[in-house]
Image: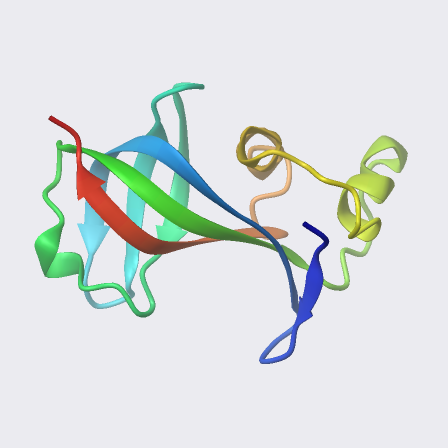
Length: 119
C-alpha cells in the first residue's frame, strides 16, 4: 500500500497496522497514551484523537490497530534516514517506525484506531 498525503495537516499517512501493546499511562485531556510495543519492547506514544480512552486500562495488553504518519517536512535528518521519510511509496513496517520514533520522535505520529483486549 502506498503512502498518501494526509490533507488535514503536514503529515503523510504511511500505513495502518495491528500490534500487540501494553498501556503504561493515558491522558484523557491531551488524548494520548504511552504504550510498549510487545514485539520490540520499545515504548512509544499513541494519539487517541477519535478513540474513547475511557475503555482502556493502564497496565493491560491490547491488540491495537494504529495508523502511522510521518511529518511532511522532515528538515534535517541523518543522510541515511532521508529516504525513510521522503520516499512515501516505500513499504515500511510498523516496527521500523517504532524504532525510528526513538531517533525522531517529533517526526513520526501513531494514531490509535481500534483496541481489543488481549486475553
